Length: 251
Image (cartoon, rainbow, N blue to C red; front, side, top):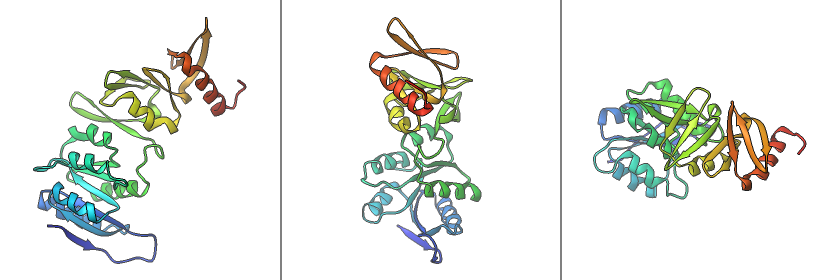
């Protein structure tokens, strides 16, 4: 059954309408209570299952969705995947007791990933991210990576280049390499407006980290943090043009 709690109206900016979905009643009520204390939230709807939430969302759009990951029947991840096909899907914040789903959550373009029990200040930060649009290119996008059962978040600004490895991609930073379950083409699309360029079928490079461009025997390569990376012939002109524009140097 869907329930709603409404906070007082305001003469300021429009208040958010938020849907919380969790099959555990105490967690559902606690999130609704905390959201009701946030002056940026005008109405809180609650559902006890993803299936019920889907029925609500088809007829009653909301500004944001707080979604548990593991639920009977349709899971939170499955619901988010369905919503991604909507013409205007609402921003999704996952709320869960399990860290191991973070990679899948961010693959689904989640705005945030909160761990239970949720602290009020952390929930307020999630609301701030929703209001900020949740676009990976408007902030320093973070990618969830797993290492030895621990989930870490690698900032886009720390990535020097990305190497394709089948259906996976390896993020190279100055300190390490991190394998993520995401094809290179997806990262190319996601980071194109943040200064990343596909220089080879298997390489995506951060233009800001290119130290040198080398040409020898008609072949082009770039030097990134001491590593030489080959540039395909078809990408050479685009690379030089983008570097020239970004650094305002002579061709």
